Image (cartoon, rainbow, N blue to C red; front, side):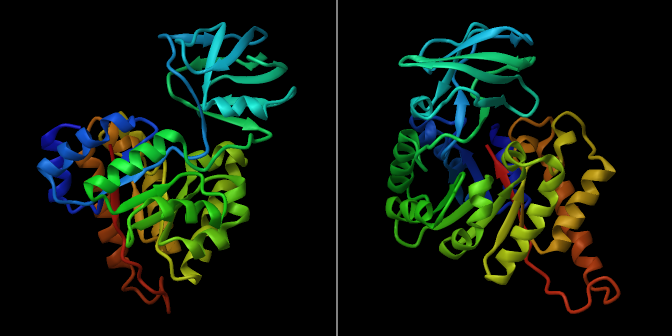
Length: 332
């Protein structure tokens, strides 16, 4: 992220700069923290990788074609169309014949046909492109630790640097939150991300054990049908509000602004309805991490929040409804 962008976001009053550990190795955390702190006094949040399977480093322009076969191996070598790398390596311990693997949101879909001591073979069920470090959803889900070795290393760096905010990805139960607390300093602010079936099933205990929760709609949509995600969002937000826990919503709020300078009307409507439901914060990710105009994206969110606050004075629309303090996050 460029210094002038950090300064511009700081001037707009963003509440947190998020460092996504899925795309920032532990060895780079101190460097990124120093960059942000050089240009902003806004707090920083370390967002863990959590219990998620990802592709390893891939060669450029890897295309998988329907009906072809591909070898699945632990990450190490550069992945190709004939040998796809996955990490963490523990995924292979519970991989089984018939498991489905969906890569990214619109990538290829594979079905495991055999498993051996060194990996697995899979058939390509749906063609698609495979890019480096993309999320892989496996059904039935493999058993994975709540934090990776890289997460633990990065958290240790964060503790040394005085980071107070930590987001726990793919929190599945209260024990995951307890583990996060055991590794972070006393008084740290833990945000549990509900983005899996297990997280939804155990939302009450996760909410109760956390300082705040975040609904990550993107990863949740990998595990449940897309059309159900808005309803899961509403249920989680309602439950968090009942428990008096701040709740944030992330993913695709302004997705069109990754490549365009204006959002769609549907996106504006989505933000408005999300605010009306009672969220306390809106989280931008790709819009500010790789978007063409991060500052304009934040301006859109700020304007939407102002419109919500003005509209909330109308008793016709919001009779007897509390007004949550809304905010925005920025992702690196």
